[in-house]
Amino acid sequence: MGAFFFLAFKASDYFEISKNLEIFADVYKEINTSYVDEVEPGELIRAAIDGMLNSLDPYTDFYSEAQVEDYKYQMTGTYAGFGLSIRTIDSDFYIDNPVEGFACQKAGLRAGDKIKSIDGTETYQKTKNEVFELLKGRAGTTSIIKIERPIVGELEFELTREKIASKNVPYFNLMNEIGYIKLAGFAPNAAKEVRDAVLNLKNNGAQKFVLDLRDNGGGLLNEAIDIVNIFIPRGQVVVETRGKFKEDNQTYKTLNSPVDIQSPLIILINGNSASASEIVSGSLQDLDRAVLIGRTSFGKGLVQSTKTLSYNTSIKITTAKYYLPSGRLIQRLDYSNKVNGKAFAVADSLKQKFKTKNGRFVVDGQGIEPDLTIEKFPFSELSESLLKNHLFFKYAAQYREQHDSILSPLSFEVSDEIFSDFCKFISDKDYAYVTKTEKEIQQLEEQAIQDNYHDLLAEELSKLKITMSEIKQSDIQNHKEEIKRILDSEISQHFFYERGYIESRFDYDDDWEKSKELFSDIHVFNQYLVP
Image 1 (tube, rainbow, N blue to C red):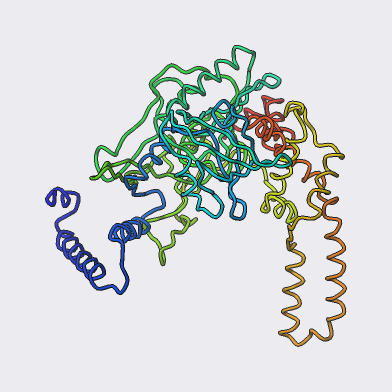
Image 2 (tube, helix red, strand yellow):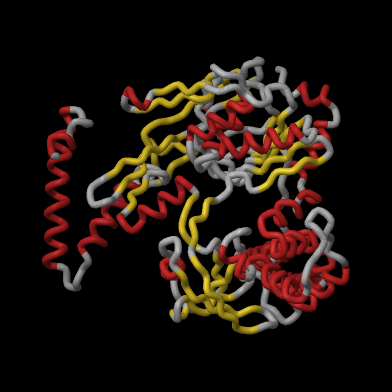
């Protein structure tokens, strides 16, 4: 084992590695023997491993025997459970979003139900990991979950765990000849799900496509390649990987017959589109097959491989970088040249220009830039505070209990009556917030004190504060449309789960509106694909 360990290192490193391993062993022995309090050997070693990996990049991780199953879920999207996600509010745990068609939803549990206990163990003030451990188990096993529901009170449910496979394509739909496909992940079968969605939409009259990769953090490389292949002929280079060893240097080409190489295609991306999402969007951009709309992607150009270690542990380690068909590497942060442990973005002076198939310029070192950028404006401080305090979520749970049904998410609208009811609901809730203007007034007052002008400006500053307070009292009305939009999504999701969330946002989605506008004039659309 020792001889094999050194094979990957050049001869000049042998002494340095051997010396430092010996020093590490001596330090560990002294701590374990002499430290004033009792220590856990496993925790010490794990801290050392984590510290070593943290010096590299955030994608290289060690998985203990207990964590291996969690990692398998990340890679496969399959797990045994009840089909629910949870959110923490203060020291309580709530069902956040039941997965439609599985145990939690079928039993009648709802988003907004507060989890009181699992098999008799109270969840209040537990850690999230402790609650996850209570929810875990083999398929076929059961648990008793006690919840507290708004208006109704406490209820008990007996749930049976089952094998749950997350959908890579949770939603697709045909809207006025546009086939919209939401791709949420790149777990196994992602390409098949996209292919099936494209075929279904084409058979029902789709002539243009929107592939939504926003907030998709990536996954399996082979699924990304096969998804590109749906829109690109066989034999086309999609991506190259380059690493330290010969086996890490690979060129990946499309291997299958495509489904559609002609229909106009738009891909939606944002700052949370990463890794495999960037391979799909970047490759189709480089090959001039799609127009990209949205915001610049995350910028992850690194490839990880999983290595099995002793005692049923494993390590996910960065083994290569990937390069798109134009030759560009889109990695944004340079982890090889950290300063005080912090990685910085690739300097502008080091970025290079490359050309797409048609000769358009693209740049490396900064993620994938869309062909058409749509500015995304943040919510108001009021809405951010209401979201942070989970008040939209809690109101939607109460609304769900008071109403048996609503119109479909594409038709449902938050009325003025619902808005007024929400205002009443939050009237006795704590959601204090500080506006940017208030921060500026505070800074002005502090500067006035430093400059010895405070006494002269005290009256004017006081008037500003009073006026600002009066304006804030009308903030609810000033941001009425924004608040109604968020309520629309929350209420729709409580009734229709993930589909409700996706469909409720179409009316307010600037990226989707721009896609429809661009598709309305194919001449303009095609102009984005030429130099």
